[in-house]
Picture (tube, helix red, strand yellow):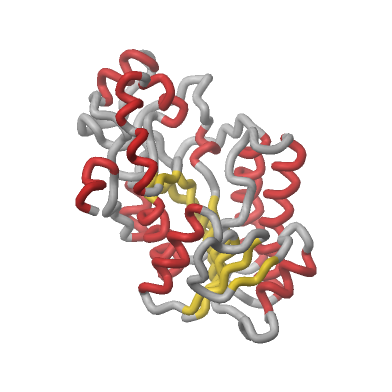
Length: 286
């Protein structure tokens, strides 16, 4: 596995992913609807909601590449509320199907794709069942965006049932941050309610990229999903205070450190070897 096609490589997570893969010796092709701000690797513009374009992008594009070994599918409308619900759902579910189906037809059996923390029930207007949250309880999509991600996970299960040699790993990324975003974190202390919608979680884009690479390299088969968050929260206030104030009826399933993430990354640590390296508390030294 040396040549990896990254859809959505021009976006926030995509840029970090492309850079990380290149630094680790991979050939990378970026396929996106918009051009990259920085030309790190060959770029192909494509509309992945068109199956013909998706199939060609994964198979062969003139001088850009003659086939790929693995696919990282990050291209999507990245959050609810940016477009009408129907547009968000259509774009995300159709592009995901097209990438999965094109890979199946081309016998590309190593896929990693961006699911979302929102399938856990965000923005938690209905309280979460317990904390820390993990992958064990049923999905609770609350928006068209979240529904598109949940159904992507369901599609992955069926594609892998059709082909037992296929690997499709869905990464439920938390709120992705770049180093420049950390300047805003001080404001959260004065307004913790502004971040309760995802239990004060986040993920550094560089660690999101690490998770993608380790998912590509994992010797797993079938469909799997992993929560991918940083090891800490966005707050200096301890979890016990925050949960008592905002979710007093939610029980902890185990003891947690004062600022430990409430979006459990235990499964990713066990099966992928994922371990966050970056974060807002050490941003000045990163």
